[in-house]
Length: 83
Image (cartoon, rainbow, N blue to C red; front, side):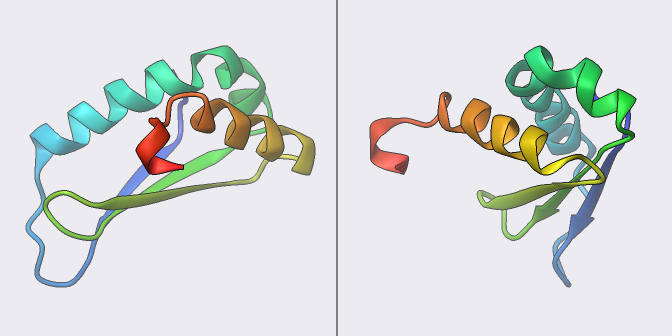
C-alpha cells in the first residue's frame, strides 16, 4: 500500500472515515503495481473530496516518468464513459 495518503474536504463537507477507508482500498488496488516505486520516492497521494460523490486526487514527490505510469495505471481502470 502507498504509505503517504492525505485526505482533505471542501469547506462544509464533513469528514467521512468510511469513505476514506474505501478510497484507501481503491488506491491500493489501483496503485499496487507501482507502490514500491512510489514509496521509495516518498510520493504523497492527496485526495480532495469535492462532494458526496466526487473526488480528485493528485500525487506529488515522484519523478515525471513515474507520474506518467501512475496516470496510465489509473486510466486502465476507467470505464469507457469516463474517458
